[in-house]
Length: 144
Image (tube, rainbow, N blue to C red; front, side, top):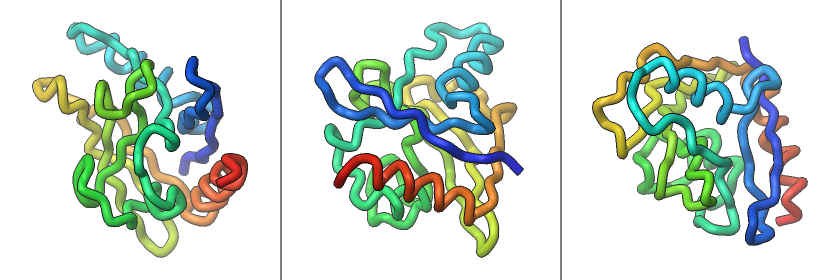
């Protein structure tokens, strides 16, 4: 199983950006390396999600796919947004599947590159307790 953590960065506008890390590697780096092998441009250009810029709701529920959300779709998450800070500009989404003991990210997609095949990326499976602890810690660090 993988472990989840988050990297917090400050955007040019002074807001906090959240980048998930899988086993200590930023998801931005993992997806950029994967996309580089697809022979399709552009590659990467992702940044973390910026809670201040978009109404994600309760992030502890959002990251479990439980928040009543329309975007990107029920049971899916925007894990990354554009490097500009706008999640809808260049998002990376994934399906989230939660069981009593695990959380899994799979079925990755980029809505502006529908022809891209992300089936070779992931899935990433986390122990649920560790996952929820990582989310709880990053949410507490936001001071919301």
